[in-house]
Structures are given as C-alpha cells and as structure tokens.
Amino acid sequence: MQTIADSKKLFQQLAKQALAPPPNLTVSEWADAHRKLSRESSAEAGQWRTSRAPYQRAIMDAINDPYTEDIVIMASAQVGKSEILLNALGYFIDFDPSPILFIQPSGEKSKEFSKERIAPMIRDTPTLFERIGETKSRDSSNTIMFKSFPGGFIAMGGANVPSSLAARPIRVLLADEIDRYPVSAGDEGDPLDLAEKRTNNFYNRKKIKVSTPTIKGASRIETEFELSTKEYYNLPCPRCEELQPLRWEQIDFETESHRCLYCGHLSNEFEWKNQQGEWVATAESTIRGFHLNELLSPWRRWREIITAFKRAKRKGTEALKVWTNTSLGETWEEEGQKIDDEIIYNRREEYEADVPDGVKVLTAAVDVQDDRFEIEVVGWGIDRESWGIEYHVIHGDLKEPKIWNELDLWLQKTWTKENGTRFGITCTCMDSGGHFTQEVYRFCKAREARAIYAIKGASAKKGEYVPLIASTSRPKPLKALLVTLGVNDGKSRVMSSLGIEEFGPNYCHFPIGRGYEREYFKSLTAEKLQTRYESGTPYQVWVKIRARNEGFDLRVYNTAAIEIINPNFEREYSIATVTRPVRRRRRRRGVVK
Image (cartoon, rainbow, N blue to C red; front, side, top):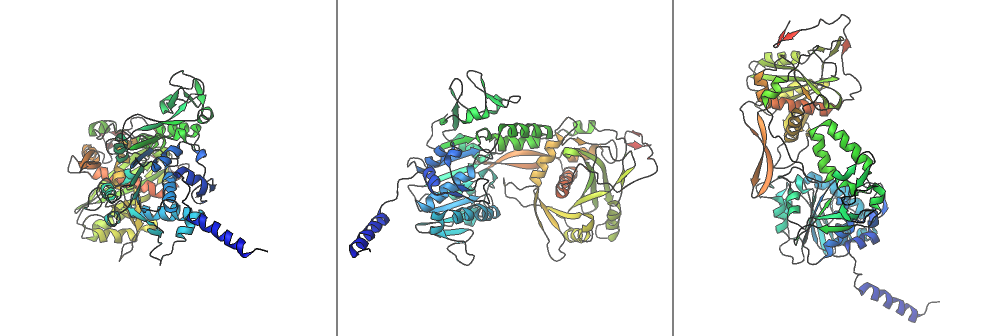
C-alpha cells in the first residue's frame, strides 16, 4: 500500500520533470522522436525517419543555427521539401513556440495546404495535438487559416492576399513555392518582401524559402539561391571515394548508372545512394542555400527518371521544361520567345482529305469581336499532335440574331477523312470577355449539351502562375458554365508547340488554304514573351508586336478545349461512316478543285 511519504516523493518527481527544461533537440531529432506521417499525404504512414532521406538532416538542422537567419531550398519534386517545412513547423509549435507565418502562392492554395497537410500532421502527432487540438470552424483560436497554441500561433497566408502578409509581427516565416508568387500582392508590392518585414521585431527570426524553380531570369528561388552558400549534396564514388554531386549529364541510360567524374567508373543507383554524403558549399554567404534533384530521392528510381526524360523529349519543349524544373530542380532557359510567321506559313501542307488520317477528335474556338466571329477548328491526335482544319470568319451585327444563328449552324458542320469517316466538333470554347458577355452566356447555356462553353481569361497578378484550366463557375443570372483560363500558361504551350520542327508529339500542322493565309500566321505570332522588372523582381509577360492576335488567342482556346475533354486518343470521336467514297481533292495554292 502506498504511504503518504511515497505519494509525496512521487509528486516531487513529477513536479521536477514538469519544471525541467526540454531536451536540446534539433529539428531533425524532434521529427525522429515525435513526427508522424499521415495516411492522406504519405505512402509510408507512421513514424518519421530522417535516415530515409539523409540529405534532409543538415537542411533541417540549419534552422537551429543561431547565426543562420535565411535558408533557401531550390529543389525538384519527390525530395521531401514540403516535409522539411512541416517538420520545422512542428518543431516550433512543440519545442520553440513562436508566431509563425506560412505562405502559399494563393489564398486557395493556403487553405488546401492547411486542410490536407497541416491538419492531418497535427491530428496524428500526439505532442502537436495536445497543444492545438482539432480545427473548429467557430473557434477563432483554431481555424483553417489560423491556429494558436501556448506561446505562439500559425497564420496561413496567400501571396496574392496583402492583408494576410502584413497583419501581425512574426518570428518564423515559412514560404513555400515562391516561384508561383505574383510580382505584387495587390498594390502593396512584392509579397515575399512584405512577409519578411514582419520578422524585423525579432532578433532570432528565421526565414525559410522553398520552391521548384521555373524560368531562368524570372525565378525567385534561383535569385535567392544565387545569393546563398549554394550547397550541393556530395556522395563519394563507390570505387575511388571522390566526393561529387549526382548530375544528370553523368547518367548512363543503358546501364542506368552514374559515371564518376574522377575515375570514370559506372556505379548503379543503390551503390551511390548507400554511401554517406555531405553538403558542400560552393560560395560564401550568411544565407544557407541547398540544391536538390530527383537523383537523390529514395522515392524515385533512376529508371523512372530516365523514362520520364525520354517521354518529355518526345513530347516537346513544354514537357521538357516541366521535366527540367521538377526532376532536375533547375531553371529552364527559353531559347526562342518569338516565332517567325514566315517560317510557319511556308511549312503548310496539302492534306489528303478534310481531316488528315492522324486526327482523332476535333475542337473549335470562337473569338467574339464587335462586328464578327472568328472561328478555328483544330484536329488533335496522339501526343497532342495537331492539324489546323479550318479558319473561318462570320461578319455581321452581333446585336441581331441572324449572325448568332449563322454561328450555330456553322458549328454543326462536319469534316471527312479520306476513308469516309465524318467528324463533328466535340468541344467548343467561346470567348466571353468582350462587349457581348451576356449574349455569349445565353448562346452557350442553350448548347451545353454540345459541349459549347463560355471562357474568359483569369485576372492573374503579375508573375502569378495560373494553370490553363484555372476554374469553373456559373455566373448569375443565366448560370451558363464559365471556364476560366490561365491564358499565359496556354500561350506558353502554344508557342512551345509552334517551335517544334519535326512531325510527332505537339507538332502543329497547317493546310494550304482553308483560311490559313498570311494574315492568319501574322496574328498567330502576334505576341512575344518579355522579362520585365517591378521593384527589382523579374516577371514575364506576353506583349503584342502586332495589333491583331486573334489567331494566337484561338489556338489557346482550342488547347483549352482539348484539355477540358481530355480524350482517349486510342479511339476516334467521329460521327458516322459515309458509305459513298469521298471525292479526292487536289489543292493548289489554297484552291480546292
């Protein structure tokens, strides 16, 4: 039976433990001891192990260095960069309570990250759950965008929302995917600068900036990395033991091995990754900067990376750009920002029929002007190889029903392959951004069953990335389906495709005649990409070099249409087969005979 003296002794021990200072843990040690990976975001749910990806340890522990204020991580996908931020967040909540600002590229992305990554981490990590608990919509101390805990709080912010960046002083700034930030948060200026100023009241502030890079000369993370120690994770050669980073140019495709820079020996992936590596700085700076590529990742096999590279190379420039950013963690240097209209005009072809044999599906795009509709029909085949089918203009008064009826009838046309297969338009994107917005909504609403959709360009901030299919809505009062497009993304895709010179993935074919005359190609190439600067921050913008750009816009809308329907290119989206043989057509200089 326990005596009063025993109870008193036990109480004293518990009190002593409660009052004792916490053990001196680093971020990686905290994660190894406490962090739990959630089922929603990890294929390896359960206890965190830094040993799974040992290159992460020095990055996380740099946060504990009292002399290091800024940490920059320029990285590919599949290397755990978001997990590093989450471990830092967990450490500060549990071990070093502080006011924290966690920024994502937009308010919407911030909400998603909070719900899909932060909330599960708090739920599954007991020591964090004790301090924060469950998110409650009516509890202002614990919501999706704000969570308080003893000694601090987490404020979630969107780089496009000025109020979320300048509301309160913070000690810890966690900035994710900074290459996706707009150049300015409203009229307030650079969102990263705004957020960093919030840390000025703290002598022990920490600023951690992370991103996959984008375009050379317009990449924030590249700019930050160039100002840093520029550290690369070096592994010893399994044969000669000379330290070196894993680089793509030393990968041998046949053997799926990495060639030593010094002895030339080829060692396979597992021989390299089993070595104990170390970070090597290539510059002097007070900013710690780390570069990571997928070759280091324990979650990505070299065979997969090589296959992805070959696939991207086959698909063309746009795919290769994405692979360079997301697999190598390197910026992409644009080679040609403008396409010569004369070159494309001169490569026009004579098609064997209305619809060339490689076409599987037709889309259409309609540009709405005050006195006309401009329409382009495009055929699409495997790997997004495209064929211009017809460019057509309908003139008239858009205030009168006659021209709208003409447009309706024209969009019901069919085109035929040499074997007699007939094709109609599978999806149409129609511009609603001019002076006839409600008329476009009314036209499209009545024809949604034919997949005729109103579209408009997204109002993106300078430098902000918006995907081609940005969102959908049903504006009142007509509630027609409206698809919002990231037109800059679409223009980059079109320009990359126009630059491809060999038949195959993403190549753009154009016929002789059918409306594809010199003026069309001038309007197709009427814009070019320029790098501009605002308060020293680079961003890219498409600028007109000619007044008429309808051809360029229509090809972007057609690209959006094929993205919307996302067809299976193993089948044909035809109407029926014509029983009578199709009359062969001979074309000379655009004249059908």
